Amino acid sequence: MRSIEKFAATGRIARTIAHEVRNPLTNINLAVEQLQAELDGSSTENTDLMLTMISRNSSRINLLITDLLNSTKFTDLVYRRISINQLLDETLELAKDRLTLKNITVVKHYSDDVCDIAVDVEKMKIAFLNLIVNAIEAMEQSAGILQLKTTAKENKCVISITDNGTGLDEESLSKVFEPYFTSKTKGTGLGLTNTQNIILNHNGLISLESKKGEGTTFTIQLDFA
Image (tube, rainbow, N blue to C red; front, side, top):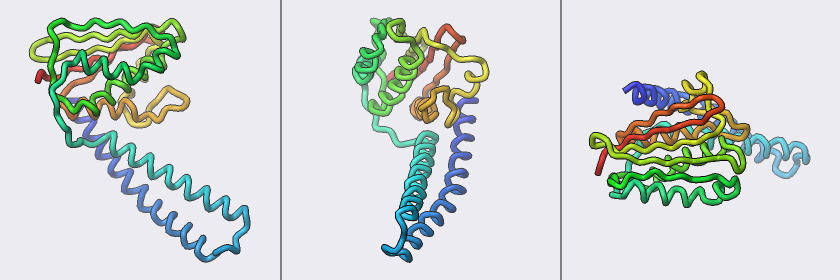
């Protein structure tokens, strides 16, 4: 319940930010278009460069706002029954190149009592792929071990994704699902926010345990189909 309440609050904040940012952004774009029309070929190369820079960065800000809204809103789902083991294997295929390039060892602990779940398969692949990519990036070259485990427990399908990477400190643990929080130099900070969004959209739960220097485990619980 705390996760859902926090996610809902984040969504409200995101919508407010989007509204407050997009209004002045629209005025900026209109002003640029007006300036370009008034100059109409009489501008200098430097002026054209500056106007192009304003337009490009305005579009970038608008895209960031769109990504933020998409990662914090509930969406319509197209449900399909699938084995969780099959779903994980298909997601691993999407990460195959990354796993190979970094020479990561994949260890599967799949339950023989296969969990069938009803999910939006493509969206759930995005959620699992975000977790797997995060794990890959946290592990050292040729020393990483990625473990995937599935079990059935009390009408729940439980999935855990474990890495032996850098791990997280206490402060990072409390912020990991917040928009724009990232420890990566080139990360957007929306991947795990989007993952949490997808899991909550499926009435599931996601949690994590991590220790600095020892690795991280994400645990997801989903209802049986």
